[in-house]
Amino acid sequence: MPTFQPANRTRYLASAFFVASLLGSLAGMSQRANAADDPRAARCVAAYEQAQRERREGKLTAAQELLRTCTQECPARFSRDCQRWQSEVEAAIPTVRFRVADDRGRKVEYARILVDGILLRNEIPEGPVAVDPGEHEFRFERIGSPPATVKVTLKPGERDREIAASIAPSSEGEPGLSSSSGESPRTESGSRPLAYTFGIVGIAALATSGVLLVKGHMDRSDLVSQNCEPRCNPDDVDSIRTLWWLSAASAGIGVVSLGLAYWQWPRVHTSPKTTVSLVPLPGGLAIRGEM
Image (cartoon, rainbow, N blue to C red; front, side, top):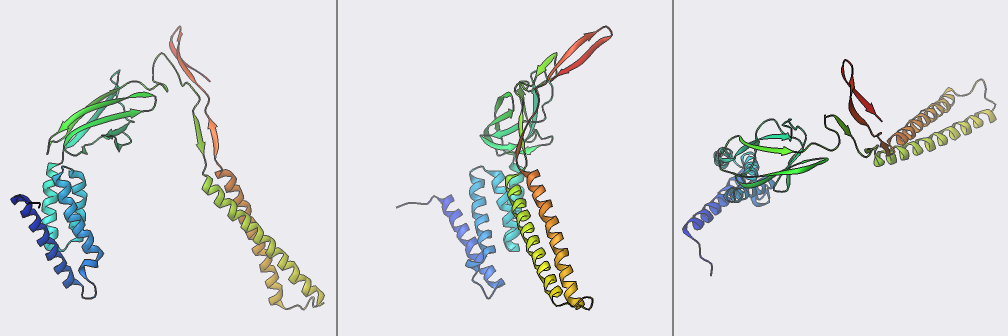
């Protein structure tokens, strides 16, 4: 049979007391619903319990988000506890600053940062970034360059720990005596779902225009057969004109929609390969580009 250590027994009793007290408080807030079925109560209890587990496991950034939920969803006397714990967690979360350069010492601004294989940022941030304490592997990736990795151990409460990395120049063109872009880059523009949507709208609008046009001509033929001109009922005449105006407007919408469908249809663009080089001149140097 499992046994509880004194510390575990204390946490278990405290958690049970919290849940019972919380449900009692929320039951007093609403007489029509059971507190156990109240979504707000469920979010409060889940955030409270999960935040404590994340905190014990050292996942302070996750615990911080859960404590924010606890502060917002729990009754006042419990949210005060969550606010206190949130302050303690924020004080314990380390922060890091990144300094990334190429092999010539030039600052690198655009590179993906992964922490233990999980994406942290898509570019190098200027300010501090919060990271859980413990041992981490920071990986810096840039297109055309080999990745750089840095392993560090962050202590709880550590502030502005500098993470320095060096990335080799990108093969897609760095300033120098000469460089070539290699294969011509291929990019795709447009959106297939939008093209389908506009196409369907355009076809439907043109079909509606045709139906309205035919209906207008049929109504006009009926008036002509009655030999009522020039004393035809003005309402009948206005109805036929309205049908023709609606037909023209629907046709315009159809043409525009089909044009947008054509414009949104995906197409691949290939950029020409370029070569940049420095050319010596009698008065100095010039930059020459070849495509």
